[in-house]
Image (cartoon, rainbow, N blue to C red; front, top):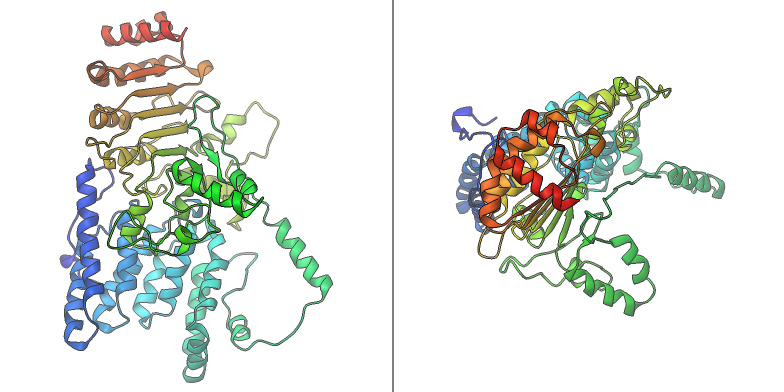
Length: 546
């Protein structure tokens, strides 16, 4: 491992008040040094210079930040730029250790790039250093139990690697005990003791891959396999927008149905997606021109006549964070987000509130969480899965912070509970990273506030709204808050009074429209009010809402 005195002690980025310029400066410095590695010739005379750059580069990253995606991708990228030599072993070991710690027991595969995850594991598997490979051992038991969906893709990434067969054959002949030991170590990482083992990582299974026995499945057997695959891959997808409070988003799946009518339809629809907000799922494979941030190279999505997306998307929903690739580098991810104008996020805090005490008056004894993938990716019993998942979603390590969206104009937040500060920090990070001025800045913010069956939480974290008004007052046009009308109580009046007391001067100075969906109850508000100005303001907009 790299000695601790050589690692720059950077304050954890979580909780910092960081500006757009701070974020871009960090990314620019690390990106410049990564490019130096590429520009350094590979001959012996320059290898020392390359190693020195690699050795010093780790200090520009924050190895304690397990949220920020650009920081993670920079470290991820650094590992792949290191050669498999003794001189870079300590750097590689630290990168692998960070990778394992980043994917902690609060991380779930619905918020990270599974393809990039498996690519990294496969590369570490072929790393000649036992110490580097051993750094993966800090992957927690909880992460492995609740993300079993990564096991098969990891296995596939290893056996599909062009190095695999030659590596297996050579090691099998030279040191079969070492080969079996390494396979067993991988099995211990991804298939811990459990009742139903997948048995991907066994010597016998991998041997059969390298030395296959030619055989043909019967038609009946093949039909049974296909039927099983179909039955086990039915995924329930649900994203409910408020009809009158949502951006006008075109569903990419619907566009595809029309696009498949003819080539002429396809070309016309592909052109239309460049200037409209279109929802997307899956990986969008753009290849950017390194010499110009606004140009795309003539291949992949941008030059493929059968691709609906020719330019980076203008719309980003947080659920798609898992499709942001780890292995494209920091520059790529920044350009990918460069055209995003509308951002939506549906909080999954509802699942945190769903517990047996909430259902004490019901007859349903089997209470489950809404995100069904947490069951599919785990072998644990439902009670253990639900308990772990509910706790994880309010921890700092659960959410991943997206890169700067320099053209962001609109933010829509659905089902926000605000139990703890993790979603507050996510939104603050996005708001702080968005530049303001010179044609940039957030213009509209809409949020739906939700509560559980007992009307909780009583205190909702709203600091990100203060940050929004402070940093984007010159561009901000409207703030819209939507509350559950039947559960709006004294604590909500108190929270709203405290919020408006701090932001009302800027709302008035810059003509920012503030609206809500509640008719003011003057008697209730009089009990909690701290500011007469806030009372008069709410009275005025309440009358307008009527």
